Image (tube, helix red, strand yellow):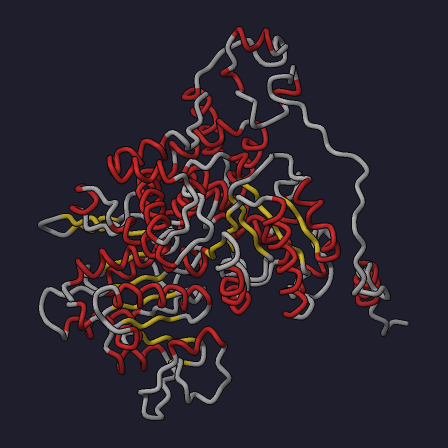
Length: 603
């Protein structure tokens, strides 16, 4: 018996025990029959721990003496009254005492579960420090560990096994009439691949930014994960994994499930805007095309990323010294985000008088097999065909270096989720191609992949390899740095092409305009509005995005312009008299309307 591998046998038995669906028919779906309606107590009726246990009502130590008496809180909280500033001070001290970003995230998550107003006051007032903890880059690590970190529900979890009960599940959400939903199936989370139900951290984090950046009330947000199984073997073998322990069904069956979800969501919450997030590329494009003209929806990976990059690109072109007619762009990465961004930038050129074909000819897309061409010999994914080149005379360019040598680009954009793909030789070749056009020209370099560990290069590398001339924007935040020489000091400021500059404003604008759908013009307008939102100090520093501390200011501008675009496109369902008033009085009147309807937590 010495040749028997006991460990292997035990592992096989463990895996067999995890396969709880083995032998059952996988095509039958029962409908959940609930026998009672959940009755929630109102805030005016709540007393004692009913108040303290509801995070939307809990004010921590800011309850006044009168409130403590009227709500039966005497003795349930310390006998001290603090303002919001002091409570934020305590929370920041605790966050800064934590050793890892995951621990900081968990503290913030626990705070949100206890006191929503304090959580958002803290996040709004400390956006630069805390947004990277609430969303990228920390959220990627959170998603990888979600099933282990889980302590309480924060979303709706809709399994394909319960597809006949979607309306029931939606109605079980405790807060009535949500206005914005972020939904994922976890099939392509950031650059981390298929994480299945663990991807729910993305909708949770994204909606926190809708509130912090645009002021959408937290009880009007709804995070959802659609659990169709996963192709992730690590998750399937993890006994703690919280999702359906099965491989994903066919694409057709997943689409049918998505059809059922969209129909149910529109029926149960007809005023809700649906934002798609982190679906695998082919599904992302398919779902957007399938639903965009029927439902209030948009895809942030495709449209939001495209808009935020376009907003930065508008400023970058102005700073680059390269005339529009000489701009040429190489994209490293041809997935949903890469193609979405490129299409948005095509629109930038068509709005400046170029034909669609002439605009499209400015773009060269590169994937893992090299330059995307029509005669490359492989079967191109549908979304890549739009940019496939036919002017390569049969020659195939297999590496990024070869493509740069061939194209002589003015801009290089990375959406590969591959760390270090922008090597020194690649970046210096980009600079050389720009320098060859004349003096005073600057290369545009956008390594946009998230999280930080997936960025195509770092900010310091980009500055060093272009001798300080680069116009740089990344997907995750880098820090400014200073270079000292014998006679002077230069500080270099990075830009972060963070989708948080546009998607909150798009969502808020669509909600407040009561848009029947989200049009391409609304998306493009969000980019132009972002480009116009910089103040004098930011322009002086050579920035192409506002400072993250001003994200609320930028979101208000984006929301206002998105509302106006909805009006121009005929999709705003607001009363005509409101638009007539704003058309008479202009932006100040519309700004006042928006500000009166956004959440600004006070403790």
